Length: 248
Image (cartoon, rainbow, N blue to C red; front, side):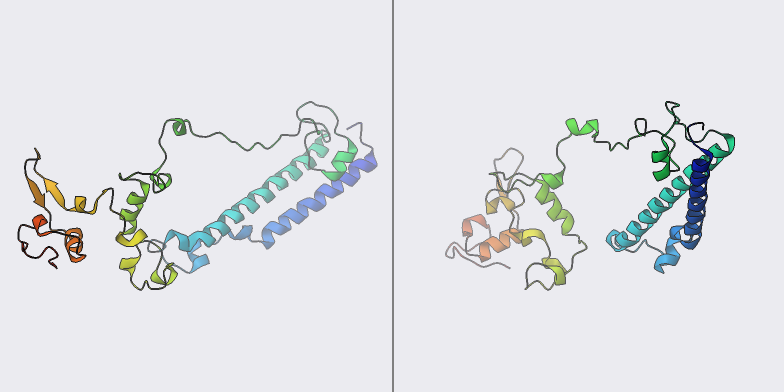
């Protein structure tokens, strides 16, 4: 500490003591940033099992923020305590890395610093990505092929199947003004052929060797006939005199 005068040292020590009192007071005043209170008490919910994850987004953000603030205050308090102990043992004002004296001008601004400017640890944000991304294909969520001539099962088809079982949207939030039922919330609402090029591929089938053709009387088949696009030749029970027989 030979590079610091007694007056400078007393000034820095007083700053550190004032900061220590302020940090301890802040921790008491903030009640550990609310971390002493359980999430049940914060939200008034006995259980979160029946809640949609989106309903807890605000609470999760606040808890993560409290943890970050608490950690920041705790780290600064530890640096202040370390600096006060260094003053007591005559080691204050020396860089922990290179052992060179830290200029008084720097200590006056950052009295709890333990490094000179050159050796101050730099925070590094990692930009490394998992090596698996080099070989894995894109997830279904990134594989919609509607913009291309692509009729096979893609990511949008997968999402439509999952969404048909329900999601967090409601008819009140739907883009269409005429939607008043959860059953009408599907993407494209049945317009997509699910990987088939022609409509009749939804209900025309063959046996294992392709020698016989069968008609599967599915909802798509009934809708096909009711729209007047079907032919009696497609239906073994159809009327040869009525090419546009309606079935229901």
